Length: 108
Length: 116
Image (cartoon, rainbow over all chains, first blue to last red; front, side, top):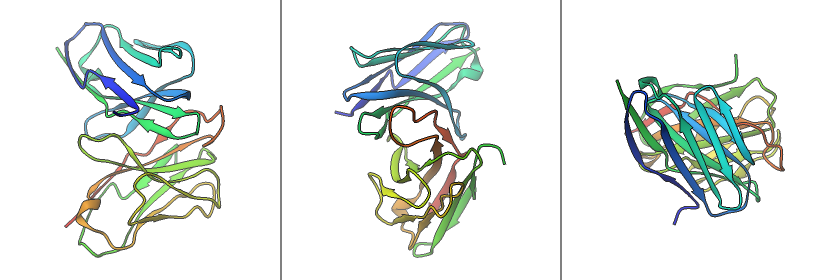
């Protein structure tokens, strides 16, 4: 079993829908990262969080340390949100562990 | 330069050849990393450096070497390329590699390497 699991692996949505991507992990962590990768593109950091909730525009990230779970929400989704979203955790031993990503496609 | 820069963006290489992927950052980050990304797998760490002058092995280090002569540069060398090293390589950096305040991750645009 991977130490970082994302669900779903693939997600399709209509423009305007509310989207949730989940990340569960099995190790103690000091921080969790949400990253975005567009097709053929580089990787961009969206959020780094260690507790609570962060919001940036239409994106919201939450984390529940007790349950070892984080969610990334996208409100009013748009075709330009189509990308692979990657969850990564920094373990308490300073190791960065990546999930395999959630591929999101938003159709107009 | 703004952020983190990789070169080349793409390269086709004959097996057995030596290749160096370059990575430079201008953020004065202490920690730098090299990952490879293969279809169906998460990013896998090849080598890392927590500060200039030090390096460490990741989970897939065989066939690769790195150096960290200064804070800005972290080149990755394939001494004798093999087809299984065909992959997309990402260089990344963060303020620190250890402790509670490691900071955000910054990635380069990636280097697509094909070994024939």
